Length: 138
Image 1 (cartoon, rainbow, N blue to C red):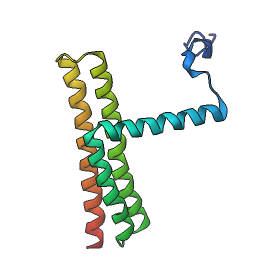
Image 2 (spheres, helix red, strand yellow; image 1 turned 120 degrees about the horizontal axis):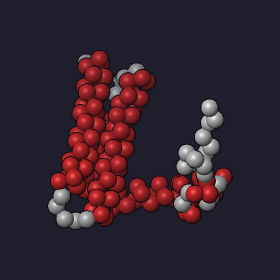
Image 3 (cartoon, one colour; image 1 turned 30 degrees about the horizontal axis):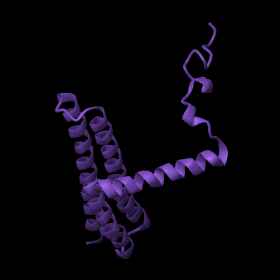
Image 4 (spheres, rainbow, N blue to C red; image 1 turned 90 degrees about the vertical axis):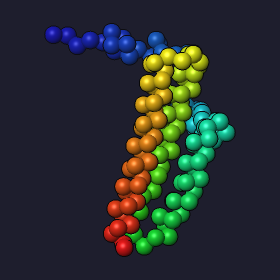
């Protein structure tokens, strides 16, 4: 049996978006620029993201000040950064849903509620990780 070609699988680069033409260092530079623009947009437009950045600004230095092993410290910091990642994804989902339509729709509500639930789960992870690590040093 003959394997399908990359074109048959929809993997032909010629069929990709015309906006994806950059390669090498130019692509890396563009990706960095877009990422920084996304962080700026989230910080300026999303109250929850700003609150979580403040939380991270408090907790990450605290993780370095506490007498915990490096593994625990790494888990503490990673759990805080996870909240920021999940909030960025949630904000992106909300922006796309709002772009499609501002009318109330059950699927739009479901998408936003699920994104919000993901943020809640990431915050619970912070509490569990920090609680476990702090119990070890208590």
